[in-house]
Length: 340
Ligand SMILES: Nc1ncnc2c1ncn2[C@@H]1O[C@H](COP(=O)(O)OP(=O)(O)OP(=O)(O)O)[C@@H](O)[C@H]1O
Image (tube, rainbow, N blue to C red; front, side, top):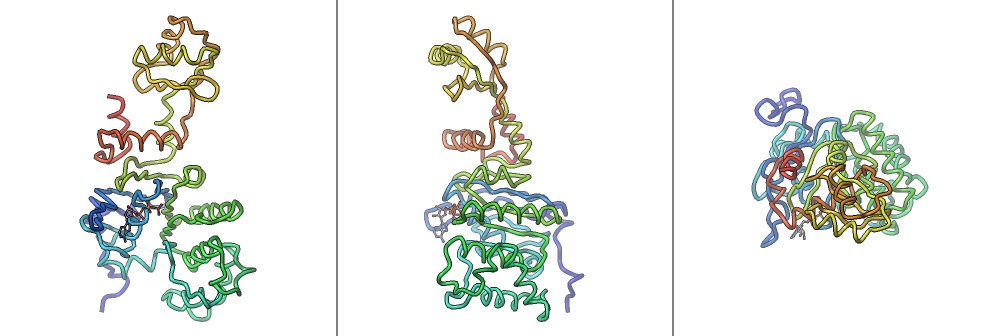
């Protein structure tokens, strides 16, 4: 019989050990809908990776394929070094997951539902179950409502229970699909704290969200999905820095300034506080010279951190208008392309 020590890992031939999950050329087609297309996703060990994308961009489908809940139409998935879905028996005990629509029993209380989940958890000894359940409920702020029927739970309470089931025992990898969906601001803060705790304890986390601020606040890495494809991925700080190529010009002559810059093929637009100028194809001195040459009064020129929000909008817009950014593997390449 195969023992746990002999688990067939693909690390040597496949995913480097520094990746908790890796997909290559991943594709899922439902009828005529291409839900996920050519997704090459790398989740580094120890990262909190935010999978960011608008509704319908393929986040849930990608997560379901990662966990072996849905079979890919094409491509490969490696989870903790094991090829999925064949390696599910090895990988999944190390993975806690909150995915859409966890199958809780409507007539059982939150606590009883969790006790059932815990009883099916091979790594939890029977004697440890009540304590583990109590701690998980406490951690997600559900202790007070633990004995109420699941049927009467609000969406936020259901989300909390799903999160609790992902946290029953320590895991190497935790996957959370839209964990703040339906939560109030306090609940959102609690989820952030849970993610921060997991990160501090060395757990790799993959969290999906369509909320940019959420990802910016909690993640070390980001993968941006758009229409089923990854349009950018990498370290959050790098992505933010890459989006930093812009200045804000303070001027009373906003409309004249925008026209003058655009006449000189410099991308510019009105923004709160003045005119926002994209420096991808120009420099700040050139911007100032152009404006002064056009008789525009320039009061101040400030470098502007773009923020993930602007980056996200820019990337998804360029994916729509395109050369397809999804055809590059990393944001580095996308950025280089943009500079050419
Ligand atoms: N079981 C299914 N049958 C048919 N189409 C599906 C199925 N699951 C997903 N899709 C389609 O695939 C696309 C991607 O959906 P998916 O749920 O993965 O996106 P998402 O980014 O998670 O969206 P949301 O943020 O709304 O949950 C959508 O067009 C969706 O309608």
